[in-house]
Length: 82
Image (cartoon, rainbow, N blue to C red; front, top):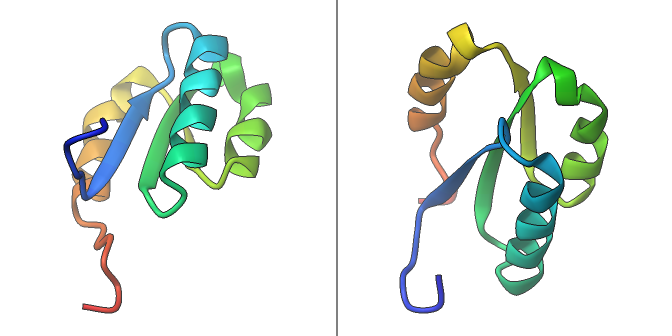
């Protein structure tokens, strides 16, 4: 991520949530203006506040909600001033 610029990042937190938290922390420290969305399963609901505290847009979803969530995120404008 040192050479590329992204409009937004989407993190699927269905795997190792602790490693995901460390990655999100690293990203927000290095790129504080980066728009990031994290999708969290119900079993990891307790991690939502920790993710939100990083300034990351965190949402709890079910596996069935994954595709609709991606479709809604795709509508988000990361450049509201433009």
